[in-house]
Image (cartoon, rainbow, N blue to C red):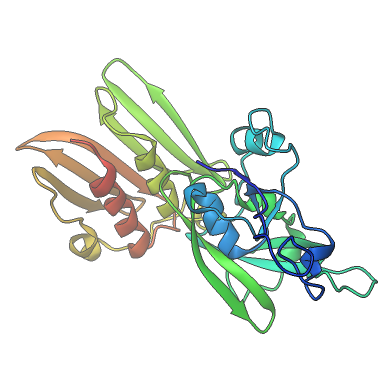
Length: 293
């Protein structure tokens, strides 16, 4: 994939024989080669997610003169991933341009990128701002649409099952006859996934369940917020030979996945008052989508 983006060469011609005229600012010095991993706007960030479509313009300068093998920008993709420290299915990243006290003919001197929970959040400046370089290395999140309002520009990031929910601690223990995965928020357990024998799934199942888990405000040892009459509406539909059942008790909700006539493939137990009907449905859909039969 192309990362090094050399500056385009002007066609020969014009008054100076180099393709420029006196009215072109480019005639007095170009901007040099750029790096596809250093976007400076949303369109360039879209190219940074798949550099096969990257073009010169809209990116930061190359710092290694094309020597990409030992470049720290490239190494940071693996060694310094950017973490979205917000527990939300999507976040709005607002772009704040920074200007010096000079005339400002060349545009902003820099940018600060602020992660927010949406257009209505105003208390986001207590978080650490990102740079554009950091925005190009956010694993597990897909780049969404460009956004603009009266406060400025920004863009959306969409969370995927490749990353767990922020603040949810997932631990796993294996015994000879079963495996158990625990999900905790602020040290309080809110869910347990139990398998007979070994696991037959990837990390995406655990991550998807963590997305459904309640936040710290709903992580407690109180009664669940759903009623047994809601069990039918919270039961996931069958998927091939995989069938599901939901059992609502006073202190817990159990979602059982059965493969075949009687073989229990997995059992998910949800506890705490933060489990609403929507969250239970999301947890059941995570089982249905990611559980390997």
